[in-house]
Amino acid sequence: MHPDPHIVVWPDYHGFYGWLCQEVEGLPEAVLDFDSQDPAQEWMWWSIRRQVSHMAWDLLMVMYRRCHTLLWPDGHIPTPIAWEEHRLGRMRDDRMLDTRLFWHLDVLLEKVKLGVEWATQVVTKVPVETLRATVSRHRGTPFWRQVIQVLPRGAWIDAQEPQFISYTLEASLWMLYYEVLTHLCTIQRLKRAQGLSTCVTIPRVGYLTLPEYTGEAASPGASFVPLR
Image 1: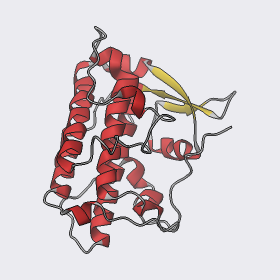
Image 2: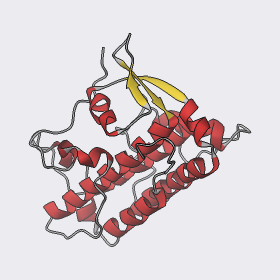
Image 3: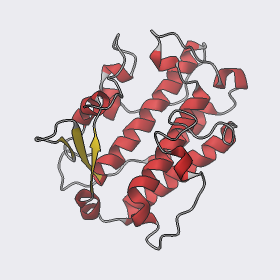
Image 4: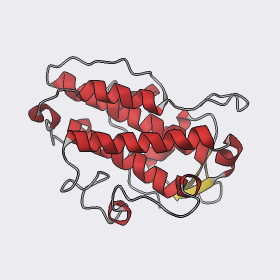
């Protein structure tokens, strides 16, 4: 997001998808499923496969929750996944696609690509004024309080009820990009942990300007526990 609101730029979601495909191409199953449940290694709890599944879930669910009236004004919403079964609080798998249905890497990449296409459609077809005027209010977490500092505008803590955070859709679309880039960075870290080289140079933007999300800080990022 450009700090000058008069200069409108958007994430290159397709560029991100190309980087992701390069990083995971040809990886054997053992590499895709390598992880560690060590409490001191939180960044390794999700394998490369699960990182990709989370990216797909994040892209698809943000499009469904926040952009459905923009993408499908006629109300005919497609169902590449069972939306209700992938909502927080109802999920079989934590912030991932249902592992019983979506496990093979090529299937997960297809879902990521679909989310990328939808996000690109929103930022290229919807006027920026509409995106800036579309505001969503959510109960915040320490994580969201931490990461919104990377935005020059579009996200704020409620002055009267500080446990709530509001976002414009412009801000949400940028945070979505920063989120998937950070998980791509974690995929690279998981490859290095297995003695493998990485393929692309990821720009240090968004969360990746915070040392907690690059491995440069001793502590992990802030908690996802909702604020009360």
